[in-house]
Image (cartoon, helix red, strand yellow):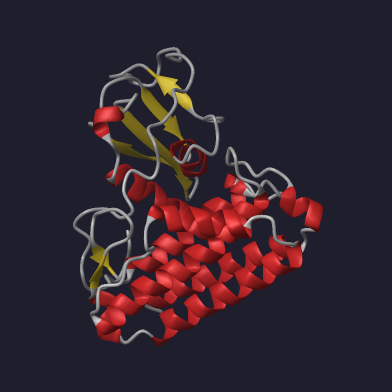
Length: 267
C-alpha cells in the first residue's frame, strides 16, 4: 500500500468515526456549544461539510490545471457556515455524509499525474495536491474532538498524531514561541525514546508524549501530562512553572518544501 492509499484509508476511517458521532446527535445536541468559542456543534458540522466542498475546488484545480480558489473569499465562507449552523441534526448529517462522499470519490478518481500538481488554499504556501489528504484528515480529526461528544485528543490515531505533530513543529512560528525546545517521549519496545526539536524560540523546554504535545500545540488542551523544564535542563531540575500558552495553530496550511511527487513515506 503506497502513501496515497494509506492516507485515503486513514481518511475513510476518520470520516466514518466522525459520521458515527454526528449520527447520534439530536436537534438539541446540534445546538449545544462546541469546544470552539462562539461555535455550536452545528457550526462545526457545517464547516466540515463546506470544507469538503472547498477541497473539491482544489482537487479540480489539480485535475484540470485551471486555478480554482478554495473559497471565493473569507466572508462567503463564514456566511455559509452561519447559514447552515442552525439546521436540524438529520439535515446536518446528510450534508456531511454527501459532501464527504463526493470528496472521497474525487480523490479516488484523481489521475496519478494530478497528485503532483501544485495548488494553494486560503493562505500560503502552495503545496502538491497529495497533501490535500493530510489537510482533510486534520479537519476531520481535530474538529471531531472539538464537537465535545466523547471523542478526545487521546483517541487520535497514532499515524495522525505523528504526522500532525511533525508538521506543526516544522511550521513552528519561532518569533511567537514561548519555549525553546520540545522533547517528544515515546516508549518503543519497552525503551523510552526521545526526539528533540531545538531552536524553537526562547523559554523553557516542554516534554511529553506525542498525544499530550499535539493536544497542547493545537490549543485543544491546557497541557495536561506535559512537563516544563528550564532551558538547558538535563532532566533533573525541578519544573520551571506552568505550561505556557502555545502560539496560534496551525502556523501554515502546509509545511514548506514538500516533495512534489507523493513520497513513499510521510513524514
